[in-house]
Image (cartoon, rainbow, N blue to C red; front, side):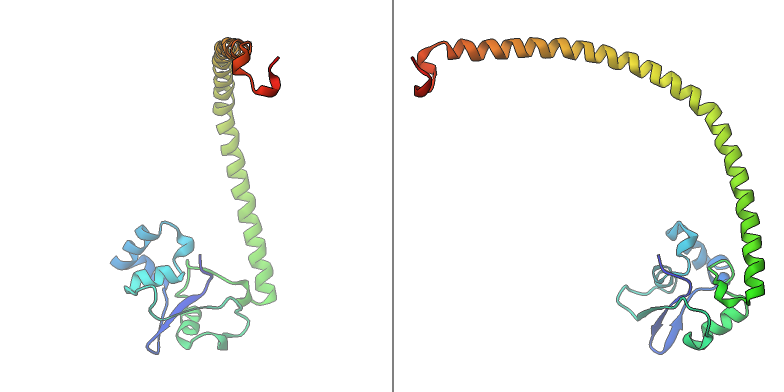
Length: 182
């Protein structure tokens, strides 16, 4: 998985994906089906897929320090400034300290809501899962006990046959190693 923001440089051109390309084009629909994960939409593999590039074409580039825009190609700086990267990634380095604090507050609230929903779903799941697991364990334990009983008896019989076969052979002097004869 590549980081936000990734691009490929080829023939003095910069290839990267925007929200519009990924979500509002036929190629974008094919990309989403191919990728299977929105985490990869800004990656080099997705860029190559979208633009029909071979693995060895161009130079993979990515940069994650957004404090200074001059580290990025102008076309990417403009795409970020024009909010064309929405839905493909974000970096709090793009925000002022005050905006980062507000962002953290919103994220914390959203995570608290997520946890609340997931905790409720987990509790509902446990209502079904725990009794089913208890029933499964009961049936399995009974079946396993019967299995162990049968196998233990068969093993005892095997051990008895093996032991008798060994000692019956050993009882014949000619079957013993010379040091064990006599």
